[in-house]
Image 1 (cartoon, helix red, strand yellow):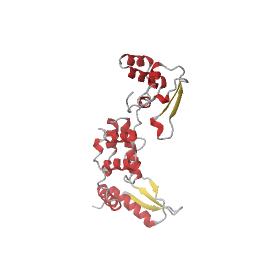
Image 2: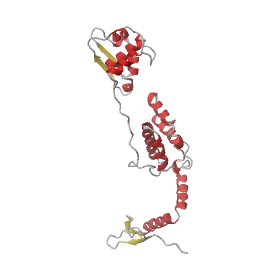
Image 3: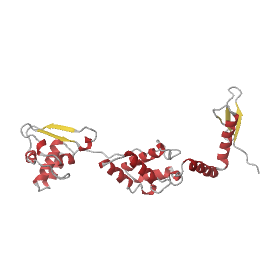
Image 4: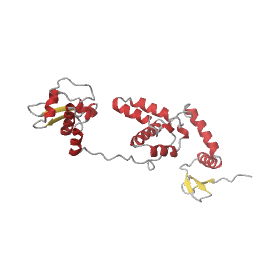
Length: 261
């Protein structure tokens, strides 16, 4: 029995351009060409797509493999490695990326081939992961697109869930006092007091040394470690009369190891 083709070709008498007519929906679509041979090939491809979708998929893989020898075997782990190597990250930024790669929600994707990835695979990871998974999976996805390893998006922007960031707030004075009351070590109390009065980050204040505190003028200076690589973050505070904790810490002239108060 002869297969009835869904699409047929016709030419516009006004513009001379060729159109595709869908026999099922009765709709027509411009093929944006006046060349009959090109138009005929488009119609043939459309009918072939309807007739043998699986065969077309295999043919597509053959064409893809002819231009990219790794296309049939490349996994999302390869994408992650490529992304990491191209960014040349270090320090805390690299640590965050490595933690994202080791996330439990990402594990099902590591050995999955890119060409076999479906939107459901991404949604499963996104629904079981947190903000970090959402952010880094989008970056890996965009990297694969930029490298032409993906023929199209796995998940459209409209379907991508928005990261649900948790509400952040500062510690209250009551909480600060309660924390101090549970600590017997005076240096730790001084450390907490310094954090409270300066509003500095824990690492920045942990590495604060005596030469950065002026007992006479009440000036305190330190470098925000998070912003140092960007050439910013130099902080100068004028505190007025310094609390006792500042005075004791100002007596320290040699910096302690990072992470220690």
